[in-house]
Image (cartoon, rainbow, N blue to C red; front, top):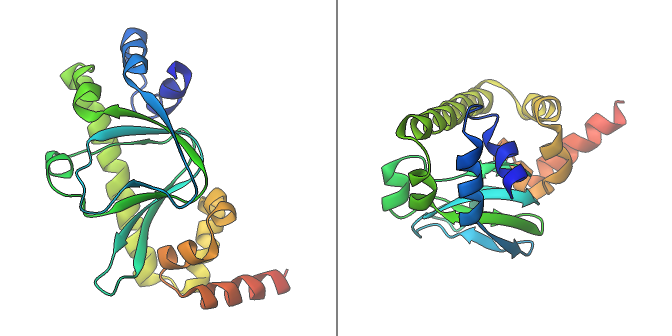
Length: 193
């Protein structure tokens, strides 16, 4: 667990003391999930820090019409946790579900945050929030300014692991198209190679 924690925290905040990582490692427990199993159900309280050891998960919204809209995907070495007080104290606006069978290390979020010096936690929080904002702005731009073909090609270049691993139906909602349209688009691109 120590190496996995280091791998997930290092890109976020490179100067976390080894002693803190060791303490954190003792707080986490490993849970195995099957494909399609929820990690967090929309409307539940998000009370855990999560580190993905293996697998692929998605964050998604359930719309009024009962259909799901995929917000983001996370793979190995990803740290996921409630970043704001509201994300921790209010019912979650989204769910987290495994796309693949996954093993995920989990820790109570309060215990997780308490192990950090307040400045270190603020740095982690700030870095993750900046990434989230940058990602949301880029995604909003792409959904509004690019056509479906450009959005898919952009994803293949910038996040090829998602293009390869995420099932067509989930990828389609993420890109803002139907699965039929995305299937047709993939076929056209393959035929033009």
